[in-house]
Length: 622
Ligand code: TSX
Ligand code: MN
Image (cartoon, rainbow, N blue to C red; front, side, top):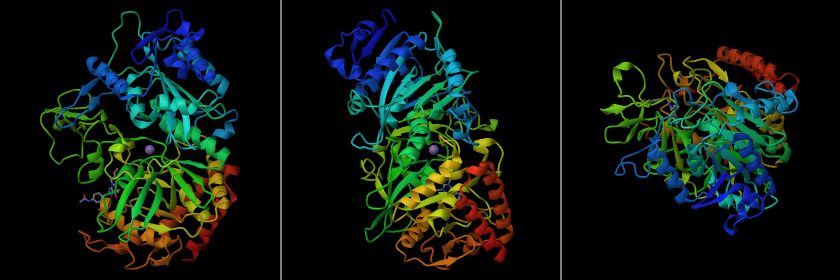
């Protein structure tokens, strides 16, 4: 590491000299935590970067990185009149989404990763990764990113330090987390942090010209060490593979910490719903992908006097409070949302949020240097440059924006951000929702009769695939609690942990299941969805107060006739078709859940097996 340049702000130092004790005053904060210094030294020695840069998280630093990326042709600055402070970035076409087959949970025992995760022995995996990381940052800058998941003032926040060779990742982490010296101050000299080592896996040889989106075409590994509380990610620069605070730390590692400490790290949005009298209740909701989670998180209400505000759109940390209720905290500082399908019609508040200071990845570029994607407007702008940088030809049949194209934006720009979004204690939950995309069988909404039954609902979440995700349309996939790709330990133990949490609190919130996607015999959506979903939230709100009417069915409680507020609705709704419970369909459903539960073997909690048996009995009688 002789002569290795160390940069912080505008100042440069010799890393070895600083290590040997000559720490400049203004850099003390970076060298007070021995474990942090050890991680930086160790990673620099293994990855052999040409320079180390300590990221302070300042606006100046962010802007300077953006300028660098623009000068290198990586970021395209958008029209400052139409999209101020915003950039377009195009990934390698082979690096466009999370890679689940390359995502691992490396616990000491295979059983602790469970049947739904990829597992490898941690020692073996570390050896494999040591080989891959050796020299992998040659010709690149090693950035050190201290970050805090959760409000800086919260005792529940988790500190991580990501080391990466991708400046795109640094910019994204600035938006998505509380990043920089504030996180270091919170860490302090003795504090613990989650080390997250990331490389795009593309070293540069002497004189080699860089590509706009470096990644490794052959080797990709997103690896979690739950016992060591460590993450190592190699070969991808995209989304959850690379922005390690989000799925890796705030879900996979946090879920393991939560299991040990008695709380839940969930793949849930959090919203505040206020009724016309001004009473407010908070709701958390889990949906598999392609169900419009961000649309619900930013719902524009169609019922006069009813208002929705957004605490978070993706992750909720939920813990029992001294008041006997569950409290939910959003650990993220920004939204990393799917762009295609987002429009002023489907999600006006998302459109307002991304009006400025946004990084767009893999969207299309219009002639006047603004962004576009499928579903934004009816008309396709012309001329248009597609996400690969070519002139777009609508006759090609291909989309102009990649189906997993994203916007990265600070939640502080959200016009309906809930005032409690950064409350260090989180918000008290009045209801929990699960949902999926199902064209048949599942009614618009139903309520479980107990916490145990609610956990059963979460465990049996399933959704139909859409073309965007897999190319196969309409196949039902199980995705318990929408956590299938994000649970850092055995999913059977996870079910048990949910049951345990319910026992520990006096007033567990009621649990509901929703399905916006039921179709009629002609194959048309029965429910208008979007802003009209407030009608469902109203029934849920009033169920929690015990005032809205319900009918008991074999699967749970549904709104009784006329209990769902359809006043002023623009379209005629076939309520019978929306709430019909076909015993034929449900017998299939029951068999499907039973065979899925078998996957968990002895780890399936008895309470869930019992809830399934009860459902079978009730269906047999119906
Ligand atoms: O996000 C959706 N939500 C939740 C909104 C808060 N989508 C989009 C899903 C893709 C990610 C929906 N799509 C919803 C919904 O409630 N419902 C539907 C199905 C649907 C689509 C179009 C219409 C009605 C229902 N109507 C017309 O096109 C006019
Ligand atoms: Mn998500």
